[in-house]
Length: 258
Image (tube, rainbow, N blue to C red; front, side, top):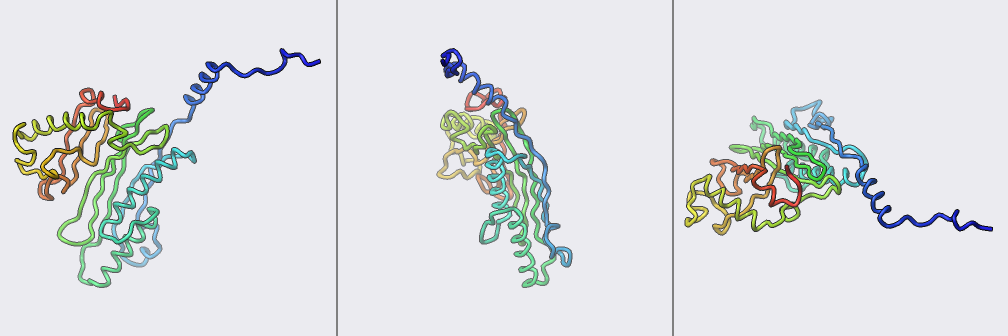
């Protein structure tokens, strides 16, 4: 005869939820390693002078979907930087390095008097790392001929639990409210009266309206609004950075940035 007391019974819902939460808490935290790449990976560069390419990037360790999402997104961004002046963005960094160098060798063959080799220098670092938010910065410079090269900074934010790239919309509780607050600080820093046009002192925001930059970065102490060259200013004026103390703006964010 079967003893009903010996039959396993479903766990109460509350206990199941607790076990699920414990399981989530035990999820292994993301770790990163530094990777360095350059034209040294190309056999042709052992025989001829190649472009100067130096890449120092971070790489999420592991085979989880979260690590893969983060690595794939960062690779896409770096490939985009290396495609400056070229026709097509490459799918991998190795391909992008080869294409960048091939373009240089082609141009060097056409313009034999070209003295300055093409350059691509990129350094990525983690500026903020917590259990619910990772912020990274890519500082880059490229030169593909002409009077000067072009450099910039890309801030990329991720949710380390899911690997999701955080846009302004997913990072901020109310983008419009944060933009209004940032405009007040911007006007104060650059001495632009409230009643004056936002471009009255020489900036060139589109449609003469203040807008958040493409890059919002998080550091240990600050939230950085970073406008790259040409975004709201000329090459001669350079990039514009507005740094906000985190304690003063943390309420605008969906994630804990403190």
